[in-house]
Length: 600
Image (cartoon, rainbow, N blue to C red):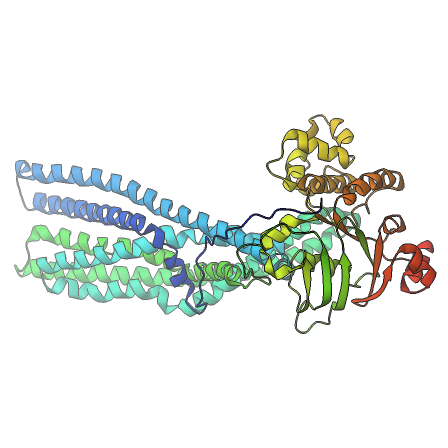
C-alpha cells in the first residue's frame, strides 16, 4: 500500500464560538435558547395562563365566599360557580402544558450542551485530559450539566411569567383601590430581590460546592478504577480516609449553602407575611369606612397572596444561582478552552498522499516553562519501511508518535507526510492516514466485535474475523461461549493484557491505514506468543510505513533502521548490526537489556 486517496473533508461547527469570555455565565446560558425562542414563547404563554387561571380561580372563590357571607342568594352564585369550575380545569391543563414545555426546552438545550462538551473534550484531547482528573470531567459532563436544568426549566420562563402576573395583579388591586398596590409594592420588590442580596456569597458557595463535588467524584472514580491495586497493597483504609477528607470539605460547603439558603427563605417568608397583613389591614379599613365593598375584602387578600406564588417559583430557583453559576462556569471553561492544535485548512492537499514521513529539525516542549522534549530531531520513514525508535524512558520516543498523530503541533521544524506539512492536513485526515497500536490498550464495555470494529465502524463480520485471524485472536474468541458477541467488561477487564493487545492489533489490521505506529505493541505477550504474532506483524508492516517504539530486542531487530534518541536528540541512526558494531548509545542499551537492566 503506497498511496491513499484522501477525500475532501467538511468541518461543521455545532457550537457557536463565544469570543468574549468575560460575559457572565447567565448571559451565555440564555444565549443557548436562541434556536428555541418559539418553544420559550409557548412555555411563557402556558405559564401565564396557568398562573392567571389559578389567580382568577382563587379570586372567584374568594368572591363567592364574600358574596355568600353578605347574604347573596344562591341562584345568583351559579354563574360564578360555573366560571370557577372552568378556571380550575384550565389551570390543571395549563399546569401540565407549562411543565411539559419547560422541560422539553430544558432537555433539548442540555442534550446540545452534553454533545458540545464531548466534542470539546475530543478537540482538547489528549493534553487537556492530562490536566484534569477524569472523575472531575465526568462530573462536569453529567452533574454540572444536569444542574443547568434549574435555569432552563424553572428560572427563565418563570421569571417572565412572574413579571407579567405581578403587574397584572397590581393593576387589578389598583382597580379595586389605588392604595392597595402601593402597600404591596415594597414587599413584592423585596421578595423578588432577596437572592440578589446574597449573590456574592451564593456564587462563592456554589463554586466551592461544585469544586468539592467534582473532587469527591474524582476520588470515587480513582478508587473504583484502582481498586485492585488498593486491595493488593492493603491501602483500603488510607483510600477511605482520603475520601472522607474530601467528603468533610463537601459537607462543610453544603452546610454553608444550606444556612444561606435558609436565611433567604426566612426573610422571604417575613416579607410575604408583611405584604399580606398590610393589604388585609388596609382593605379592612376601607371596608369599615365604606370605601370598598365587603365582598371584595377576601378577593383583595387572595390577589395579594397570589402575586407571590410565581415570584416564589423564581426566587426558589434563584437561591441556587451560585450552584447554577458555578456549574455553568465549569462547563463553559471546558467549552472555551483553546485547543492545543487548531486546523487551519478544511481539506487535505489534493491528490494521492504517499505515506512517506519525515521529521525535519523538530523541536518541541510540552509547556513554556518545561524543558525541551525534542531538540532538532530529524529522520525519515519511506513507504514499506519499518523504523524503530530506541532509547531510555523519557528520551522522546512517545513524543515523536504524539506529534505524528497531531496531538500537539511542533514549535520549530516540521513533520511532513508525502512532502506536505502535517499542519496542512485537517486532524481527521491525519488520523485516517495513521493507525496507533498503544501499549496500554483501552477496550470499551462492549462486545469483542464492537471493540475490533472501532478501527472500521462499517466493517462486515467477515472483515472483523479476518482481522482477528491476522492478529491471532480469532481462535481464542471462538472458545468463548458467546464468541464475538462476548462482552469484555469495563476497560476489557474480562481479558488478559495480551488478549487486549491482540484486539488492538486487530483494530489496526481492520483500519488498514498506510502508516502504522506501534508503541510496545507486543509487550504483554509471552515469548512463544510473541514469536507467532511477530510473523503476523511482519506481514502487516510489509505493506505500510511503520514506526515502532520498542525496548525488546526481538522487536527492535526486525526493524529496517533504528533511530536512537538520547535526551530528546537523535544520537545514532542505522541498522541493528551497524549500531552494535559502532559501540555507542545503542550498544550500551543492548548490553543493559542483556544484563536485565534496560528500563521498560
